Image (cartoon, helix red, strand yellow):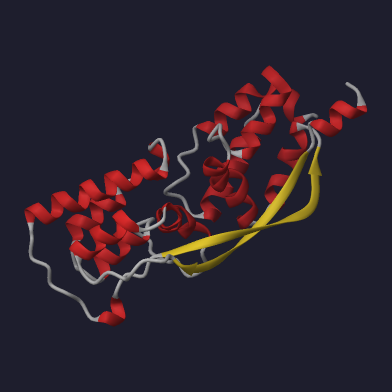
Length: 227
């Protein structure tokens, strides 16, 4: 394989951080307002409240993985709505606009079941947020699959998020960056890519996801690990 080809197949490991900002819509204090704001907010808000919670240091709910479900449980005291929203995995939908439509359906169903709209104190209103992802180089470059196996245990949680979670919205293939890169090596990485594909990542914390990834690559064929 030529040097030029090797350069083309290198993987530059990135890291990232989030800068959060207001989402540009009014806050919500009950279910009907929540429904109205979900319908009107930028799609970046949907992504933030469903997918960026995993990398946000302030998110600490052990039961639900998205902000809407957490707020419905804690502030509206509506466990039924919280559980229905909490069951939505955004990566099972074709797009985050498609997810938005399902969120609206869930809220509509709950409003029809129980139209009582008891407001909550304004200090506990739901604030729609979005975030800008700031990306930076780590200086680490992978040249072959064995490098991924070697260095993955050293990756930061935000690197794991950027390459394995955020990539699924960023890239046309909706694959994680590791799998997209490994495809360039052909059949020798097929089993490794299959192991990565089987990880049900959405309901995992980043420490749990990192452990799952390290375990998965540790089971790959010897011809890949040997490099």
